Amino acid sequence: MNYRNNPAAIDTLVRPTEVHRDIFISEEIFELEMEHLFANTWVYVGHGSQIPNSGDFYTTTVGDQPVVMVRHTDKTIKVLHNRCPHKGVKVAGDACGNTGKFFRCPYHAWTFKTDGKLLSIPLKKGYDPETFNDCEASHGMAAVENVRDYRDFVFCRLSPEGQSFDEFFGESLSTLDNMIERSPEGKLEVAGGVLRYMHDCNWKMLVDNQTDTCHPMVAHESSAGTAVRVWEEAPEGTPKPMAVEQFAPFISSYEFFEGMGIRVWENGHGHTGVHNSIHAAYSEVPGYLEAMNQAYGHERAAEILANTRHNTTYFPNIMVKGPIQTLRIFKPLGANKTLVESWTFRLVGAPDKLLERTLMYNRLINAPTSVVGHDDHEVYERSQHGLHSRGREWVNVARLYDPDEANRKNEVVNGTSEWQMRNQYQAWARYMTATMKEST
Image (cartoon, rainbow, N blue to C red; front, side, top):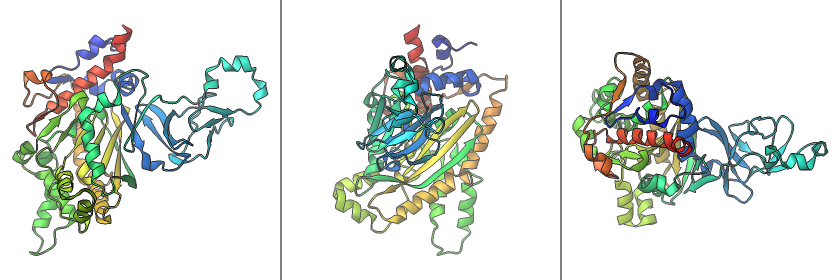
């Protein structure tokens, strides 16, 4: 089927309780996602602590678009398309660094201010001023107009028109608020670098998995289950290792996950862990509660720390774990290829033991050398291959479906419901076709 400039065809791929396999395996669909979905939504770029000083920059991608996040001379954060307007060369070639007061293209030495404006051209006399001013290149590096710095979390929307940041995220921003407020100083810093892990599957499989609570006790039995069995054989009185605390909840019962609850927000966002969480039973860290009580008062500190949300999915492609201070980005590289970046944060003003726990969790669960992560990778890869089977064309997301869902929003449901998955796919269809329908 031809999907390009055909919003009706896109709409047919998402039914109330099923999604068509093409959204995972079609290269044409993938190209349209890069062109429409990742332009029409607010996509995470990076964190302000990555670029604390004027001239600091960090390069990344939004969909398939190379961008550079930079701290401008006035201390504001700019997001620029990482492309020289002369010959198209990527101007910022390093992953991060400090460019000083301007960027310099490595090909012909055109220079640009940190807001993208053209600064200088060698031998500029070779260009007729009137002719050059009519050229696109005279405007410098293209700046992304719609950028929002939300408490140091930087998002952008590539499309000039569309939903506002506040409309798009709504109540879901409470997860970021809670993670920030877990710091006695109300501040986070990226710490511990980033773990990158290539997955041989479509990026939406990873997004789907974040609120799939019927798989942990099955897929992770061989990893987390083995770790727990080894611990249970330890001599009586052996202190419980931090790693076992982090592994053990992955093989909790169906009843545990049912009771956790899932909150479904508008526009594809949602989170597991409303009433309980796999992060709720960690050991206390000496000095932390005292620091929180001093900063917020006993009642407010207790309220902040009691909010132990499991996975918060921010549509389209990040997941945040507030209680353990991690953020994962699912970067689409192809219909069957996804790069996962796992970032960790320091709670400024909190004991270092908390960062140690965060870093251990990231290594155990999210790293290429992790134990748990490989369970998921294997089933993703099997799914990517299996979806090419002509035996069936549809993927089922019907668990605990209620036909009245379309008329409700921002609700808490059973922890094993697939409503949040349905929410994501419905948002997918809506943002995929938003600009298509405007032009037809």
